[in-house]
Image (tube, rainbow, N blue to C red):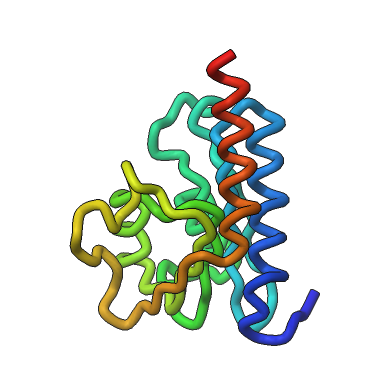
Length: 149
């Protein structure tokens, strides 16, 4: 489906659908999509529990799927939408993919890349935060509330 460029709300809602899939699998509910030329080319969500792999974050899964779709290791011209601020590992991976834009919803005070006080992204990557932040945060809070019961 083709959508007007930079319609961040639409694309973040698509990432939230992926986060819901993670929630339903009892995974930390983080979802990600990659958009290229106004087309969603990859969809992913956390699979760390399912795959028994601490690196199976939504962003990592989305980067792999997008690279496979494009048949290329670089994601120039692409935008990553993710419901939670990327961790340092995922920010570092985005550096290597050379993705043009990263748009995220909720901030991660403890484990997000910004907690390091430095940018781990490629110098040409632009970052935008807070898109549908309350919706992204609400799903995470509900997940951890259920876990604490």
